[in-house]
Image (cartoon, rainbow, N blue to C red; front, top):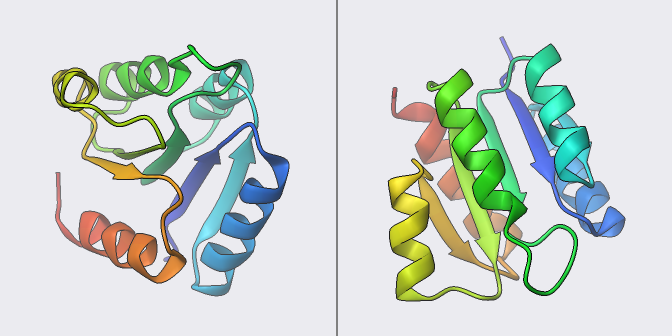
Length: 125
C-alpha cells in the first residue's frame, strides 16, 4: 500500500518538482499552495506525512506552524516536516512545541529530503 504525502508550498514549481519526485518514488502525492487549501485536503483525505513551507503568504507569515498545529490536533499519527529558509532557535522550539517532527533548511536537496521522509514514515508514531 503506497503512503500519502501532502506537499504545501506557495511556489507552484516546488510543489510540482516535489510531487514528481515523490510520485516517482512510489508515494501518492497531493499538493496545496495555500493554508486554506491544505486544511481542506487534510479534512477530506488521509496523509501519512505533510511537507510544508513555513511561509505561505508573505515574508512574516508562519502558516506552516498553523498547519502543523492542525495536523497534531486532528491527525496525530501524520508526520510533519517543515521547510524554511528562516530557521532560528526560537522557531525550532515553537515547531517542537507544535509537534513538528523535523525542521529542515530550505532549499533541501531531494535525496536528503527523501531519506528524511523515508525514516519518518518507517518510524511508527
